Length: 324
View (cartoon, rainbow, N blue to C red):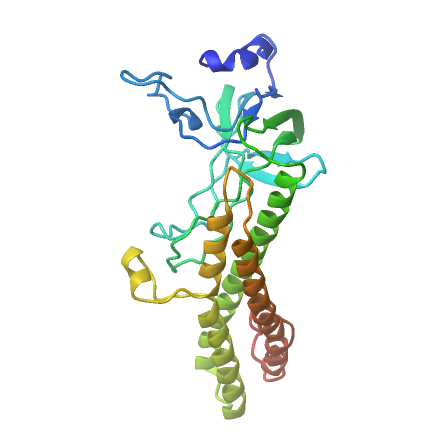
């Protein structure tokens, strides 16, 4: 702990062992960098030639008993309405794949050392998923949570402890009543849409790969023709959604962005620690939402009608169904 952690120090009782979580010091909804945003055994909290900013986020201390290596620790953060804002785990996502800089970063992990542990929530909402193998030059992190009180729940095994954390507005930001809430609702809606888009893209791409393998085994010419038609329909939708030719930074100069990259760009341009939304952003969102209505309708048709219909033909021919 450093001198910024005196609030935590006053709550810490080393003689009382077991699972505990301390109430964090209020954080400000600003934007600055600090080496204290992360944990490092090498960093001692000072720098030889310059001052060190306090951590930019809620600094959460928790105490753990000795845990087995297989025991998972998780933290849930909810707003005053009970809406889940962020989930953090001690376990790495087994499905995460590096994106060569063109996708989401790995999720932060909770340490689970015996005794006192420290985690800094950057106040960010959930990270949006990426597209494995495709380079999208964008930020995938969720926007910062707005000023208010948040419930923090720490779970390990069958035991749960809770506390509250507060995010305060930066006093020098000039905002009107309801401005943070309006900004939060807009950002949350857009991030949820990109999450839905990328989940659909990833699901249908897996089906597409499965279908390519199934087509190799089909002898019936009529069934094969139907399968090829379905494959072409899925590929056309995928090509409208994602630029799969981009695999590294320079590729974005050679291949045009597709739909989800455009939506991510809008999110990134709207994202700010100062909750301002201009008219041009809203107009662009309206344009993209109209396009998404049509694109989503095509995806729904594939998932709810075309694939189930072809699966029935596969079953009737004694071939296993496509996984979806």
